[in-house]
Amino acid sequence: MHTPRTTTAIAALRPGPVDAPDSFATVELELPPIGPHDLLVDVRAVSVNPVDVKVRASFDPAGAPKVLGFDASGVVVATGAEVTRFVVGDEVVHAGSIARPGTNAGLHVVDERVTGPKPTSLTHAEAAALPLTAITAWEVLFDRLGLTAASTGTLLVVGGAGGVGSMVTQLARARTGLTVVATAARPESQEWATAMGAHHVVDHADLVAAVRAVAPDGVDHVVSAYSDGNVEAYAELLPLHGTVVAVDDPVGLDLVPLKPKSQGWLWEFMFARPLHRPEDAYQHDLLVEVARLVDAGSLRTTARTTLTGITEENLRAAHRQVESGGVVGKVVLARG
Image 1 (spheres, rainbow, N blue to C red):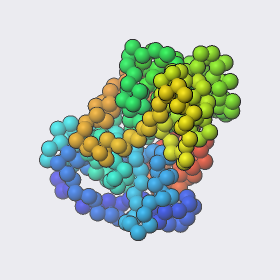
Image 2 (cartoon, rainbow, N blue to C red):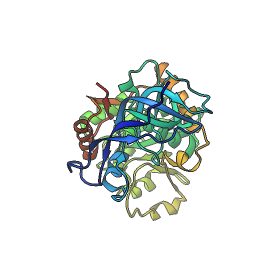
Image 3 (cartoon, rainbow, N blue to C red):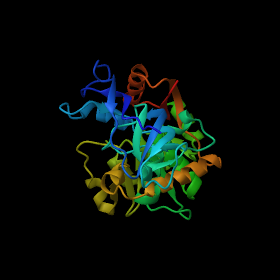
Image 4 (cartoon, rainbow, N blue to C red):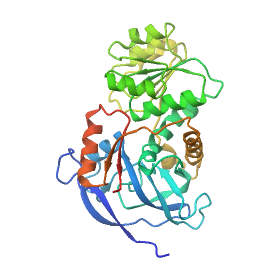
């Protein structure tokens, strides 16, 4: 089979606001070389995450056009010489690496070791919502916090209706004995967090009081998607040596309130493994298990809004929604 050398992609030409005319442009780009462990994937659906918004607004303006997109579901059309996990025709999901071109393209080159099988029970649109948030949530719970099936106690998920919060709640319910307290302010967000499996959903306006109303002794772990202004509340709610894992990018955060109880603050960045340990197949293995859990009915897609067509117009609309900070679940674009 002839392997294409180029692909049509939607790229940001220059960093800037979502409505800038050069924030989204259709371009024809050379595909990167297919490495020994790479797959060439025909992209059928993508989703938009906060990382897309951050990169679009701040990448190097002197560089080449920036293809965003860090979630995809598609079909393998070519493989590298040393690929062992997939064959041409396999349906796959992946978030890829932030160091490589993104998924907002017709074809995408991705390492098999950060790629998983598409759950057979989901459409490509439903599956495209999963990879980045599933990897993030898995690493938060089972890597950074070291939780197991025997783990009990209480987990506070701050931002329970977002993409990561939705997956943290589901995985905690499916693979641990934790009680999950999720935060959500609006009725639709609270309804979604409950549907994801949270035992309790509380408003974050007065976080300490709201959490203590359902967990009088506080919580054992915190997963934080909104850290700014919450460190003192976390310090009060957590026990001696309790831990926060943050997935956001707060600026100038003061962590001193955690010191009196020797509490810990950890970061989760799901691109760390692809960037610094590319030979590690940890993310492939966890995506295999996520697909199994989805097909067994233990996890569900977090796709809530689906736009038909991976187009400039739809990407702009999706970025606007994510940038607003009020997205419930995930925004997905499916090829028409």
